[in-house]
Length: 163
Image 1 (cartoon, rainbow, N blue to C red):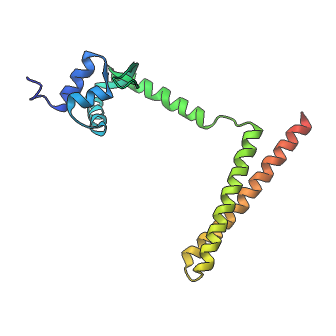
Image 2 (image 1 turned 60 degrees about the vertical axis):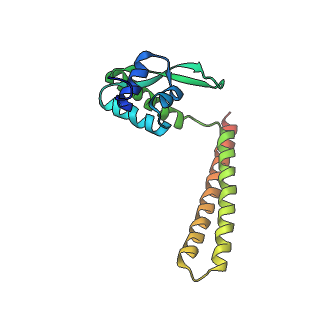
Image 3 (image 1 turned 180 degrees about the horizontal axis):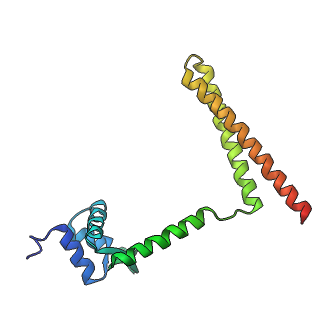
C-alpha cells in the first residue's frame, strides 16, 4: 500500500515504529495538526499500540523535543499509575510555616480586593439580588481568609514556643 493510500493512523504508527519520530515529524508525515496526532495516538492506544515519549532530540529550529516509541498496554498502565501516584504526592507536599503564611497573606489580599469590588458593584446595583448575594459571599470569604491567616500565625507562634 502506498503512503497516499495509507490512513493517517497507519502513517503515524509506521513513523513511530521506524524510530526517532517527534511530534513535529508526525505532524509533517501525516499532514495534520497536533490535536489530530493526539487523537490518533489515543486511537492507537485503544488498539493496543501505546505511544510514549522516549528520548529528547534537537529539532531543526534548535528546540528540544521528545521522540515517541510504542510500549505494551501493561507497560502503559504501569507508567500511568506511577504518574498518578507522583501527582498525588506533589499536591500534598508539606509547606513550611513561612510558605503557609505567605499563601494565607496572599489569600487575604485577594479576598479583600474581591470583597471591595463586589461591594462596589452591589452599591451600584442594589436591586439585583445576584450582585448583592455575591457581595455577601465575598465578604464571608474575606472573613474566612482572615481567620485562616490568624490560625497560621497562631501555629507559627506555637511552634516557636515549643522549639
